[in-house]
Length: 121
Image 1 (cartoon, helix red, strand yellow):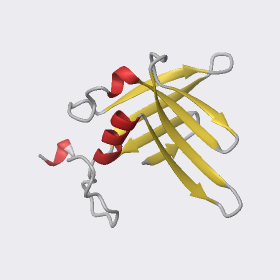
Image 2 (image 1 turned 45 degrees about the horizontal axis):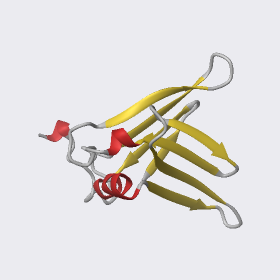
Image 3 (image 1 turned 45 degrees about the vertical axis):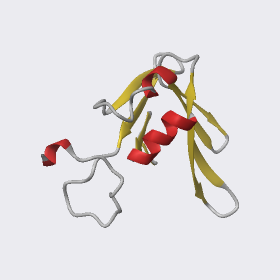
Image 4 (image 1 turned 90 degrees about the horizontal axis):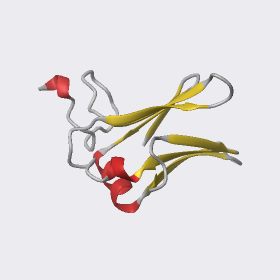
């Protein structure tokens, strides 16, 4: 699971195994340790929500994912889901959850479990 935060946007990318695990088990989490503290990001399947939503609690981002989104996601061609979650006043938090594709350029990162990049076909 990879996370990218930029301004008021949170983007999470998942490998094939992670998409399957989220759909089957209902949650995923990842931690980055800073020694005495850790930053955690969590995906949770939720039957109650109709769109992506997120909360921040201390050192943890929790993104709620509608169960309906995940039902066929491991086997369909849907790349991902996004939402503009209203926050204070007229501001929004942009949320994006997507499948992770193999890079087209040379990279040293292990991409064996990533989805084939549609631009490489």
